[in-house]
Image 1 (cartoon, rainbow, N blue to C red):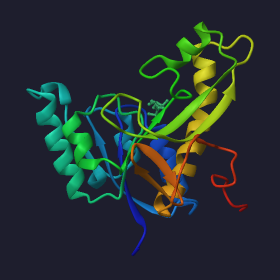
Image 2: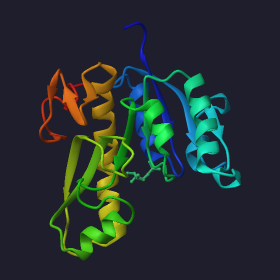
Image 3: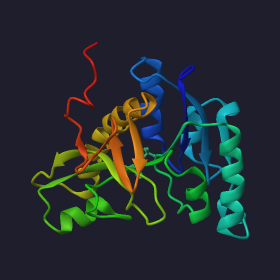
Image 4: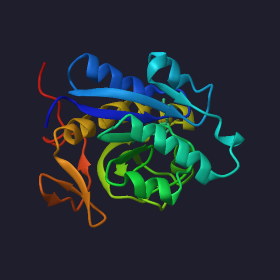
Length: 221
Ligand code: GRF
């Protein structure tokens, strides 16, 4: 390996997970370089978190087809030569062609303990079910939405009186730690996707790593 690994981020909104990556790079908790932020919305707040030279955004709704947008996004991404591509609040479905092009390097952070609550409104649905435990997952992206192999998860308790906003805020805080922890493994070359499973250090993971596992813990400062 020569030089820090190159990370690209796909984001549609606020970009707090992107910020967690930027902060981890700045504090040297993550040995990586951010090579671009890519968005399907020209006004995504996430874009403002990085210098203009790192921004790529197009209004996906103005494209005649998903394929056309994905192709342009994919070409721009490929030009940035990322080792890892992180969907961090990227709200647009990626087509099969795009996923095939980048498969194995494409990660997503999702605000639930997958396979529970794929898709949208995860906090509201967890509360409606009376779930006692909720959380977030980082997984490889595959053509089926939120169904790829899960690398790691962070759990949070559901508290008496929680609403979707309070629960979501508690999950989001753990998302930031989880995403950085998984990226630390990724840039160290320790995780991969093989045979539809997530692998760590050459072994298939049969269950996702918990955020408090030794493999994910940050070294003491
Ligand atoms: C996060 O909850 C992420 O898991 C979900 O969308 C949200 C994005 O938040 N996919 P942010 O844009 O990173 O602040």
